Amino acid sequence: MIRRFLLVAAIATSALVVAGQIGAMSAPKLNGTVGPGFTISLKDSTGKKVTRLKPGKYTFAINDKSAIHDFNLEKGSIHKKLTGVRFKGKKNVTVTLATGTWKFYCDPHETSMMGTFKVAA
Image 1 (spheres, rainbow, N blue to C red):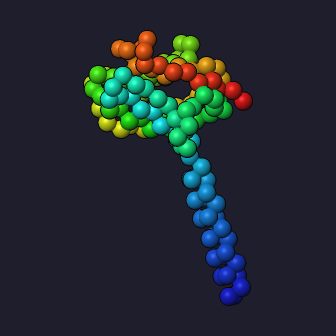
Image 2: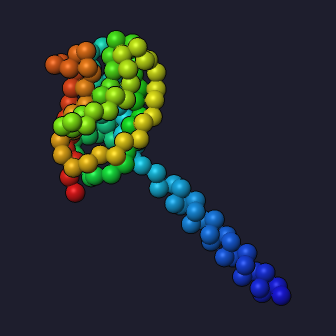
């Protein structure tokens, strides 16, 4: 009887560990910053400029430091507004990125505040 109890306890513990590991496998985080001056950037979790990613889900952690800017993502006809012009603060948005060249930019100041990155397998 004790052996059976220990076996059930071991199985239950293993299931909890696996469930915790699956929960920890969230979308990779990318850090976007816009403002306070006329700057916009997108960096990975190590602080390196994002130039190439694999297709899939990513969490964009946007730090919008100015109420005169916004943060947008675009690829062809796909447009994602992550923050609006009047927004100032931090916001997390999960986006699924498909293969292609993506642009991130501030809509009112797009000519000087933009960057690109490629998504490829």
